[in-house]
Length: 411
Image 1 (cartoon, rainbow, N blue to C red):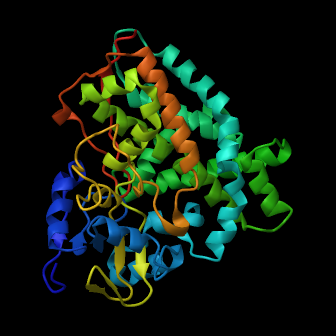
Image 2 (image 1 turned 90 degrees about the vertical axis):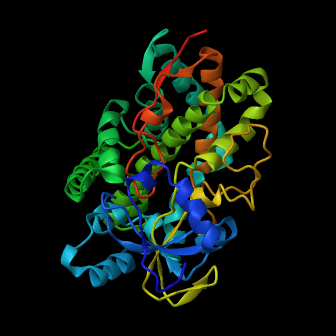
Image 3 (image 1 turned 180 degrees about the vertical axis):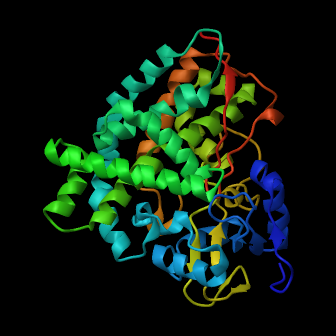
């Protein structure tokens, strides 16, 4: 796209189906000036460089000249649009975590929690994940239409992350409401109110954990603050928040998106029912085809640089389009089709570089266990509404449905 041309204004049609826009832009190049949809939480109307194309997105995700630092991004936003004031989402006390920091702070914060998400640690959790999954499946009604997101795809990952962090399960519903307002809410005011509620809850929870310590990730983070002085009080609350939200949003949307594509492709559903050895690869295909994060978090250029042959001025915002990269026809053949036998390697659903998703091993196990249970229990599950009636959440980053009504048809 010509640097001097008017930026493309994204709208609700883009939110509902971004792929035609990605394809049109990709045909013109890899870096494009766009204006975020007016209703986008916390960034409506913001001008950014949208990056498409697999190789270009992958390179951008690992480019140290593209900073995720909260203070830098917030300061630049204030300079570019001073009349709109500070961005609630960027300036929140909940945002001082590893996703909004650059090395060396990013390295320090990531190291504090990385042991909990190794493949070995996740394998040890698998029996509990299976227990939670089968309990939820057994509780689903027989031969009725249900919203699979509310009844299954949400409670599964939130119960797992509550188990990992040592949080009472009965408090999970609050996080569902807060997350929706923060990630895909209707207004900056609603997001700010949710941020305040989350910060207050986490502060109170941390005090409870101090009084009654247990063997969990949150207690370890509290010790890192109280005993070892390895993170600040704000970082403690922010890191706890990140683990909660990232711990279920990715898995929730991977489950919902994967189910949608499976029930719309009964031959693929049957292939998985008949051959479960296809399941690990199928999970990678779900992640590629409808990535639960359509965009990475905002970056800002710390210096003038070239992306895809386009000069990006220092201080401009950059938004790598993961969903566009994962449907790049130069990287993946027939990219818009679901193929559970596809040998998927190298998709960017979990990012790339130093910010590659720490919880990827946990998300993969949860999604595999979940689909294994659903395929067993509901051999003829089908969508209960016209696909065109489904709505996608109005989020800058998340690619997830508002609801997923299905007919279960228990075996």
